[in-house]
Amino acid sequence: MARKTTQSRGFSRPSAIVSNDMVQMKYLKEHPEYISELARWFEAEWAPYYGLEGPGDAEKDLQASLNTDSLPLTFIAIEQKQILGTISLKEKSISHDHLGPWLAALLVGDKYQGKGIERKLLIEAEQQARNLGFDSIYISTQKAKSLLDLNKWERIDTASSLRGEVGVYRLGF
Image (cartoon, rainbow, N blue to C red; front, side, top):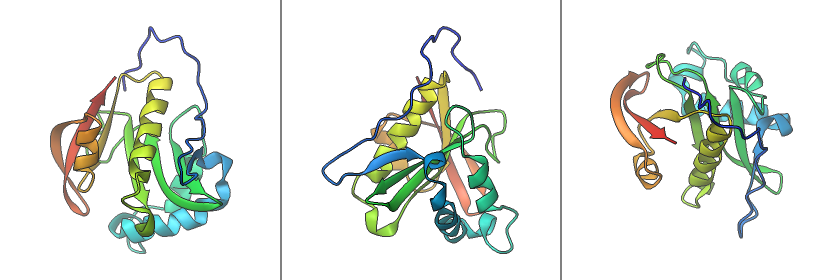
């Protein structure tokens, strides 16, 4: 987890990203009332890990990410008090614990997909990693290749996950 030592910028809170659809990017810490709903999303999306027989505890992980200037932290996309999606920034990955930090849990509700929410979440998390002084970030995914290509991520490896093989990507700053 390399941090730039020359960066003198202090931490800056994310400004609300408002588009025609009034989607705002917020820290989960500002809206902990969404933790239970997000935990259900995690349990459905990542059942092998967060499901009934999995080793993970979605609610506990989300509670741990109620930070704004240290890892782990979580962003949510909301519109008119409705949660649309989420992304987290955390120190380690299950597969590549020598690399970090990691973007994780990029998830957008089914009816909100294809509306640019994933990209807004990704950009917000990338900016936060820069603000925290990291010189690169990583993500592993099966689904977001085209989004990562659009944002200039580099595929560096593959890894096995509970859901099968995933690509491992790096974005340098």
